[in-house]
Length: 159
Image (cartoon, rainbow, N blue to C red; front, side):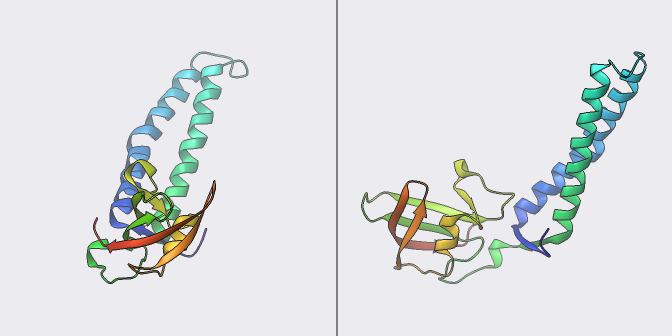
């Protein structure tokens, strides 16, 4: 894992909430399921036991991953950001020059991306193309279907 990575305040809180859920609810539930499955006898042919052990492995792995991410997170408070350049946390409105379609995306951490809520990862090709640009700039963005030429209409910092 990298030394640190950016995440919004909301994304950080979401990871903490998931960790708490895993540690306080899911981990004890899977331990109980393993204990209950052991009582059924022969463990070699006990599908419930093997499924519970596999689930325990996933939970423990996710707990370790979340602990590492939280420890290395560089929490960015979007409400404290300002300026006219596109940076992490910015919400960018741009227009496709060919189709005149207007889109807006907020640039967030890798764990926060949610295309349905117009949140794109800082490591996505679109975000990488937008970073450092300002309103009024025209640029070409690589997309899965090829490339689009866009003009940045607005850069905002809203959470």
